[in-house]
Length: 344
Image (cartoon, rainbow, N blue to C red; front, side, top):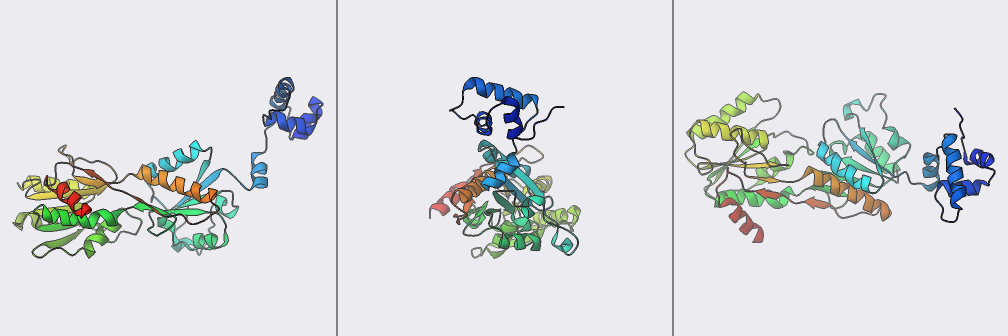
């Protein structure tokens, strides 16, 4: 195979200057079209490829953004949202998983795109925010970064739970539900989708005469056990009950309430928090509040590009709004009262 390793080789073969070869390969407007065609034909015949990496080193720009996350802590829709924004700008996406903190005392290193600084910026999932390796790198590097899920004033993109959940709980009470129940994980890490719903519910102060309860569904708790708790609560409680739940728990509550004859949505209401519209196993649409993982990725990619263009300055965080799903599992008054509460 005939190979030309540099523009000098091409220039010698074509009998032209290196500058002429450079102009031909980079489509400079001042070069003769016939000369350009001849040089490109020679470059193709001799398998010449421009050294993009060398050019990137000289310019200090790699047209690449890193995405750093922990094990199984990021949804594919987030990655797609990031990729599409970057791809439209001609920028590639490099992905790396960081090791657990408990492993960092062993012979483990950061991924190459960190240690060799072969990226223009990095998007960091909050699942790995406190990892020692990462914190040491951030303190010494000049590369811009933003966070996904972490809640702070600057450089973060996250769902705006705080603006919607407290008012939603109040709207459940205004809709006539006398007991409000959170059902979901209670020991989830901060980056888990159930962390903020649980914490906001835990700190919520209901009005007089309204009770609240928490039913834990952590991974260490058998599903049969927490389902029995739900069935026992629905079987003995005469008040109107509303559940705040993720998708799987919401489906279970609907199934149990239906099986023992509690009317939905009037005797038993279900408010599902998630990232997409969901249905019960009988085809009923769950009333819910949803945000988009795709938009989470889209916004984080746009933020890192803004930081790069502005020279690593802090940029205000982006709070993703929730959208309302007026389904079959809540009193029809709920969203009316929620809108009134938000206006108030």
